[in-house]
Length: 498
Image 1 (cartoon, rainbow, N blue to C red):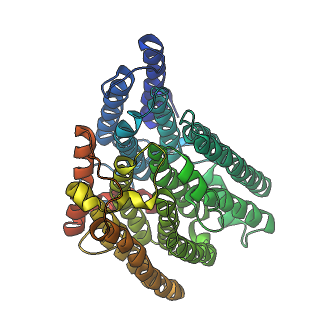
Image 2 (cartoon, helix red, strand yellow):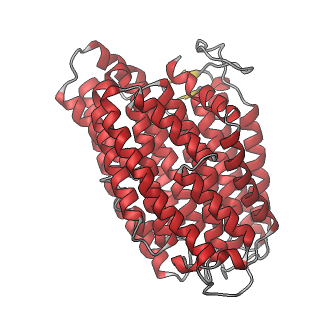
């Protein structure tokens, strides 16, 4: 790969790196993190930079001239620039745009939260940009070395973000717990990569796939290595039994960080698992369907049943996220193009619903670290707009028509029904959907049928209000008119099957 092709593949990451360094310089020049107000220089620079990079990512297209074009539809060219250091296909571009959008949403989420902090406000946008850089890097990964390096960049910055809240012991505790579990996950991952290299003699995905296809039955060493890699990535998406860190870390972390973990960090694990299943295992992935289905079933059970007794909103959403990871794993277990399309659509619908839910949690919290369930009691009387927005988010997460979450679950179930060996999982997921309706409706009941515990006025800034309204409209619009988002998902997944 020549320099121009390398810059084409990693132009988004290069721009994010420049933006992160610029934020550090602005922080040093303008007050060392002690700035006040929503329009401070660091936040303004982060806003402008992320929006500009997202615009560039939306304009950027894969270059079919250097690595044959894949079959696909639409106006854009669908192809890939590939080498041993990265690939820029439609799948990578879809996730780069997704991660940039998530970062912009989380930056908007942090506005109402940061007003409560006496110091440390400038660090958050900088860490957010560094984390987004690592996430975008992982979107283009096509070898195990880059995978590990990019994942560590994401994980280390998330460690710092979890412990970002100054003077809050629970935040420091969340950071420490996250470090311990993250180190354990990294150990599984790097040990698995070592076994894969020992069994195949290669790190890049294409060579490992060729070795799998040419060697006949997969060796025990290679199976062990790939299993350990799956375990390491299972921690990232919060699948059972690798979910143990989620409730405590979600509860203790600053709420904007929890939102970022619930969407961005989960999507990182998803993109890497999809690369592993479709780019590395290929046809051999059919033999791993039962493992993925088993993880899906455990996640559905633990996530839905564990959410029922929760009395903290962030822990509640953490268990909810475990259940949603079960649906993603169900789609992945199908090893089909319909399953891949469903995953991409599901992540987009989940982004809108979860962002709206966490924004309401930030606003209703009396203090920066109080997210008890009683904070939403009587919310309909205090703020009908916030109550309506949280209602839409809860119903979309539950999969109630005509919201986007319903169609996302329908796409997953449709892909799974086509696989006879997964019918038992479809039945289980149907039962768990009914269970989830109960605990999501309990939140709605609190808002409309319980007296408020606090009669103070709830204020929401202009940017946050527009973000919340946008999440509500997106959940409704993409539920009623699914085709635009479905088409984006199909284009994103097309290169996996080209």
